[in-house]
Image 1: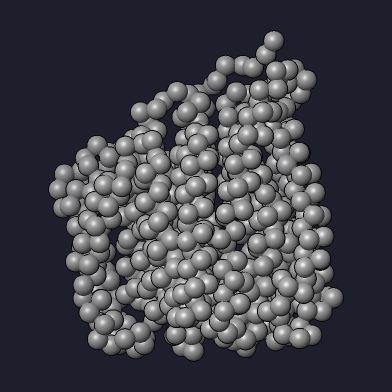
Image 2: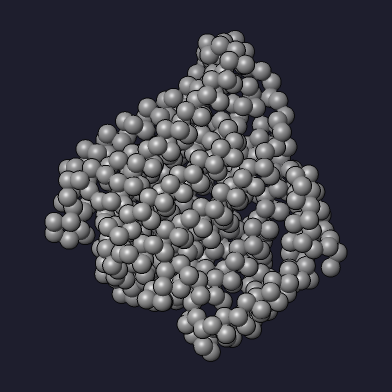
Length: 526
C-alpha cells in the first residue's frame, strides 16, 4: 500500500526565484562581457576563434554526458516536494550523479577513439597532452554543473544558484585577468576546468544537505517507497524523452562554433563568437523568468489549477515577447557601440550578424513558455519535436549558408530556425495560444518597435555601424525617448489587457516590486 501524503499546496517561489536569477544574469553578463573584452584584447583572432571552437566541442561532450538528467530533476523535484517525498528525491539525485559519471566515462572512450576526426580543426601540434587533460577536466566540471543546476532549479532554491555561480565567474575572471599576459588555450582550459569542478562540488554538497533534511522530516526512505514501481516507470519514460531533448539541446549551446570552424576561417569564427555571445547574453536575461516558470507550472498542475496555467502562460508569453522586442531593437540601434564596448572596433564585422540574431529574439521569447508548459505537464515529446525542428533547421542551414555566406549565413540560419520552432510549438501546444495568436503578437510588437526606435534606426542606416562620440550621445538621448514611446505603444496597442496587467502588477507587488511593475506596465487603462 502506498503511503504517499496528499499533495500540499506550497508557496509559489516564482517571483523570488525570478528575482534571484535576474540578479544572477545581470552580474553574470557583466562578468562575461569583461572576460570577452580581455580575451579580445590579449588573444589573436585566430587563437580566439580556436578557443571558441574548442569550447564549443567541450560543451557538446558535457551536455551529452549530462544526458537529460537535469531536465528530469527540474520536472520531478517540485512534485516530490509537493508530495513530501524527500527520500525519493535523495534517491533520484544520487542516481543522476552516478549515471552522469558513467556517461562521462563512455564519452571519454568515444572521443579518444575518434580524436583525429573531432579535433581536425586544430592546427598541427596545437593539441598537446596538457591541453587535452584540462579539456577533459573542463568537460567533467561542466557536466556535473548541469546536474547540480538541474537540482537547484528543481528544489526551487535559485538564490543558492545565483551566489554560487557569480562567485565562480568572479574567480574565473580574476584568474584570467592575472594570467592575461600569458594566456593560451591550455591556461584558459585549466582555469575553466578547476573553477567548474569546484563549483560543481560545492553545489552538490548543498543539494545533498537540503535533500537529506527533507528526507529526515518526511520519514524513512523505505516508508516513502512506491512498491508498485509506478513512479520509477514514470521517471524512466520521462527521462527517455529528456535524453532526446538533451541531444537536441547541444545545438542551443556554443557547439555551433565548433561546426562553423569546419566551413569558415578561425578569424571569421572570432567575429561570429562576438556577435553570438552578445545575443546569447541578452537571451539569458530574457530566459531568467522561464527557468523559474516551469517548476511553477508543475506545482499548479499538482494542485489541479488548469485555468491558472493558461492565464499564467498567456501573461508570461506576452510580457516576455514585449521585453524581447525592446531589447532586440536596442541591440540593433546600438550595434556599433555595443561591439566596441564588448570587444573593440576590429570586430565591427560582427554587426550585420548581430542584427539578424536580434531579430530572432522575440520569436524565441514566444516559443519558450509553450515548450516549458509541455515539459512541465509530461508532454516532453512535443517539446522534443519543437527543439528537434530548431536544431535540424539551424545545423543544416548553418553548414549550408555558412559555407557560402559566412557569418551572415549563420545569422539567417538561426532566424529561420526560430521561425520553424515557433510554428511547430504553436501547432503542438494544447493551450489556446496558437499560431494566429503568435503572429498577431509578433506583428504588433514589430510596429511598436519601428515607431519607437525610428529615429535611431534612421541614424544607423545613414551613418552605418561605426560608433562616433557625439552621435552616440544623441542616440542615448533618443533612446530615452524610445523607451517611453515603446511603453506607450504597448499600452495603445493593448498588447496586455487590463486583466493581464492587473495580474502582473499584483504578483510583483506581493514581492515589493510594485513600483517597477507600474513603471513597466503603465496604467491599466490606455
